[in-house]
Length: 140
Picture 1 (cartoon, rainbow, N blue to C red):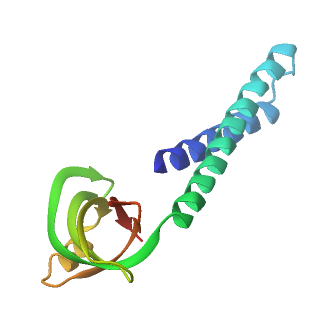
Picture 2 (cartoon, rainbow, N blue to C red):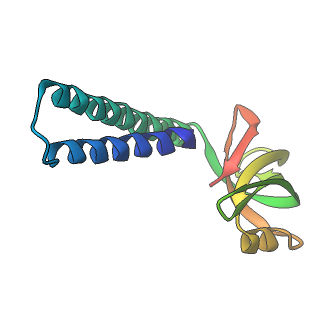
């Protein structure tokens, strides 16, 4: 779902840039200019929709999950990097406030200092989990 956030922001910024360049250009305004001005408005609308949908998804996810502490059992790098962050797979044992502990895996983007901290013995991390599906776990 973070893709929706990135897409929404990029559509909106692109639309604003194109729109401003058309409005403030020195060229005479013809009917084709106004047609091309409709494209950034459309892109901006799509971008805003993506941002709103992402916000609604985050609210639904937060309402359907619970927060708990988890012990990091192991951490594995996948070899994928996004900017300066490494994608890792964490194997954790979640200790919910109610119910028995359970094991799960989650993917996360972490930088090197965070990976070093979580590689320490008995490292703890705060997670969110879905009580109906305990395999749905992500960092809080």
